[in-house]
Length: 136
Image (cartoon, rainbow, N blue to C red; front, side, top):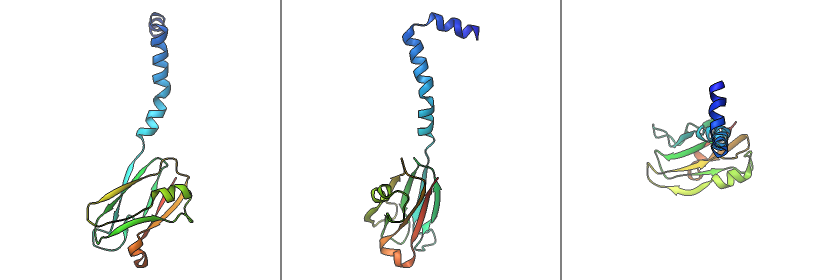
């Protein structure tokens, strides 16, 4: 500890402030780096009209990639009336149809309110192609 104090005395004020700034901003960088990206397949590997997984639990700040897998076309519409945050649900819907396997798009849940975000595929809603994202 004495060595640290001695070293700080020899450093300029600017250097000390830089060290303090870097150390104090560490939690900000750690939380941003902790965000995850998850994948939900549109159409199961077995060719069923379902999302895989159909239920996913994430944290606010995470991203979900929707991957067109099998039996296209698919899209994603979030039910804003039943979602925890109408703004996030409206912003996250992707009504444009993905026609080819391998196409994808990402939805960010940055700043999302905790709760459920139900969604469905418009062309296959009648077949029960629906899912739910739960933000903790």
